Image (cartoon, rainbow, N blue to C red; front, top):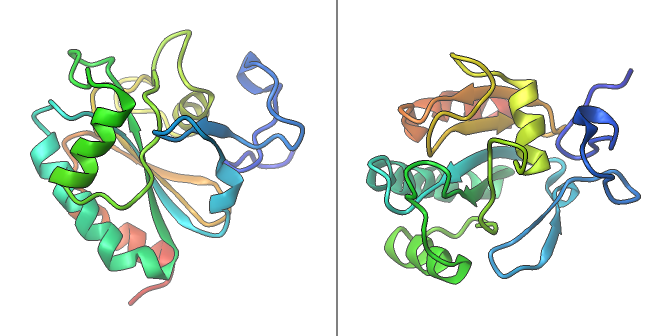
Length: 180
């Protein structure tokens, strides 16, 4: 069986709804447009569930922006997925979320539409991420700002807890980017 990646996820895994004909993950961006994740093939990805009213917001967003600015031209991309499943800490509309992230924290990386990361209605990408790299106490996402590092081929390399500073994983990002 071929290794599963975030770029070519088959529709029979996790009994999820059928995927598009090319078996690519697709999510809606913050403006409601479909985005196939295969467009990021060849890039190192940091996929993060974000929230604007979380205690980790003021530390994570600036550090994510710092990493993005530093490595975006070397094949690094951050994919931010707002989620309101933890304490209702992302209550805004997609438009409000984008304004918040882009204005207050200068986020230039893609922000997607709000998703669920746990439960029956969990986004298929998050089902895959969690099944690829379980957490400390099982597969469920425990809180906002859980981070998944994905290599250029779409393989999930690591999972980081919400308490893990984005800058503390810079060495792992550099390794995947082959940056000294």
